[in-house]
Image 1: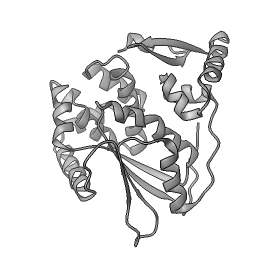
Image 2: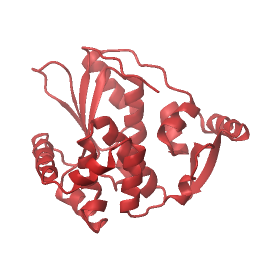
Image 3: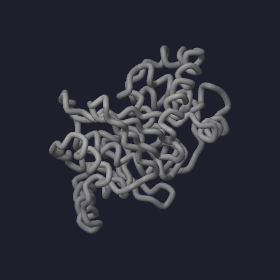
Amino acid sequence: MLLLEQSDRTVEIFYFFDPFSNDCIAMEPIINKLLIEYRGHITIKKILAPSLSVLTKCQAQSTSSDDNVALAYKAAEIQGQSKARSFIRYIFNRINPSNTICTKEMIDESAKLAGIDLQSFHEDLQSPTLDAMLKYDLSVFREMDIESLPAMVFFSGDVKSEGVKVEECYPYHIYTYIINELIGIEKRQLPSILDYIRAHELVSFDELKTIFEWRAGLLLNELKKLRLQRLIDEVDLNNQSFYQLKQSNIPIQTKI
């Protein structure tokens, strides 16, 4: 488990995303890698973009407040940003590899895996507080003048400095350049491939390429070794290769 080290030299990042956007899904490994390599020096506030188009998508994918991703994510946030990030990752694992709609069962399972108290979570889903939280997110969204997703806005600790906004998805080094320009620190070491898969439940081949930046052949050989050691399973979903721990009690492909 990675521990966050506190530092006065930090960058605060507001990240706006659409849970049903392929570009936003492609940003997930970039977000994860930033959190690993700059742990203790960055904070990322992950905000489900409260635009009309995104909220309409969430509404179209739901039958009630119990399976509305936007409301569920806000309810998860009440129990902490870390749990909310884990929650949305588990949701991504269930709706995106097979292009399926979100269900109440997926939301409950994802909340449980993220360590969220389900009783409080369901109470919060019915609370008018969520509407107030979404309105606040909308005010931040408008203040930062977000026009396209995904979008990241970087702030250093200098209150006199303006934020640096980057919209749409770019290569990883663009984001590291901005962080280094703002606070100039060294990166932390990446975990092993096995530890990364363990921490993220279900991981695509493309995600691993983004995280570790290995040649495809070398990465395939390493994954083959882990399979031969019976440490991981390869899962084919929607014509993509995904990897999960061998010890998983219920294969992810039966959950989605």
